[in-house]
Amino acid sequence: MVNRLLGVISALPEELAHLSDRSAEVTAIGGLPFWRGRIAGREAVFVESGAGKVNAGVATVLLLDRFDCRALMLCGVAGGLDPALGVGDIVVGTSNVQHDYGLEKQDGFVHIQPGSRPSLGQASTPGYPVDAALVGRLREAVGGLVLDPLPETVGAGRRTPAVRFGTILTGDSFVNSEQTRQRLHATFQAQAVEMEGGAVAQVASRWGDDIPVVNVRCLSDLAGAESHLDFRAFLPVAARYASLVAHRLAPAI
Image (tube, rainbow, N blue to C red; front, top):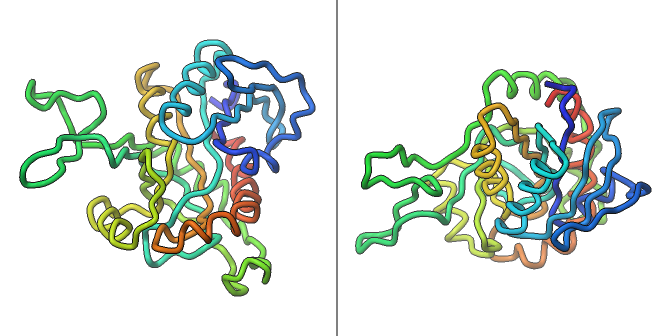
């Protein structure tokens, strides 16, 4: 599996800054920039997808179809949902779930798997779990990794970030509400929320069951009432921490 060409997706240029130097020739397809490079010695194709599920889905299709990538990694930032986590912590996804796909009913919103048809008896439990054997390799790859304390300029104290594994949610909205953070955490027992991973996992699953998707996210904010302020301040630092973990994981995917 590790010999497969790896596709690396980040939504923002800040998230790619520590993954690839873009020294190779850039190919523009569908308005998205793609270029070849290496991460942790492994050959890869990088793409800056832009934010949101549609952008991420387009980038994924092109990586799979045009470049024949057969393993995928997302790297970037996310909002924290689990109150036990803090700014700078890194979450590696064990499942990617789209939290905004489902049915609007009189008694509330029902979350279902994108594209499923429960009325026909199709399985509708949302989520794209990562293969347990792959999760085991990823845990081993970051075993013993100790990250540096956050810079004082971040304003989150001199806490030392930790690497966690858990569920990452995806939706086409930036979470800027403490009430929403609490609801999402309670509903899915998820650790983080972002705007791309679930779409990448959905596209990859249509290509086949043997295409791994690894989602690496550093918490740039806690997805609460002040997340619109925290995100801009912490983005460059969070992106760098996420890239450190991504370099450890890339050879194991």
